[in-house]
Length: 86
Image 1 (spheres, rainbow, N blue to C red):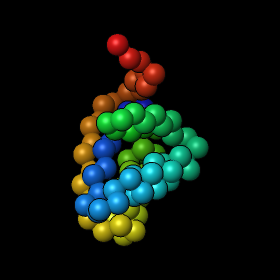
Image 2 (tube, helix red, strand yellow):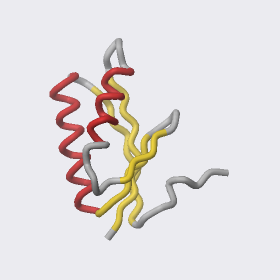
Image 3 (cartoon, helix red, strand yellow):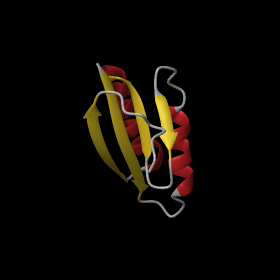
Image 4 (tube, rainbow, N blue to C red):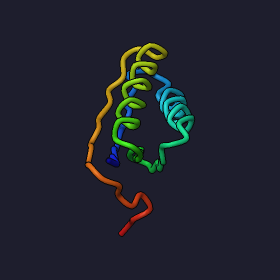
């Protein structure tokens, strides 16, 4: 089963751009995951278990690397068209 997730990271850090770029860069290291980022959030898509495992791993890594950060996520079962816009 496929999963599409939207994730926003809000580092509680004065230099908040660096942790966000670091996090997105790490998401790109997963070959089975498709990623699209816009000004508000990042969408990822792939096998359900692979996406969930990746997010758990990378959110933990971000907390270990940068300390406090808020992650806001939305999940929908299935593969959405990440290029869709209106």
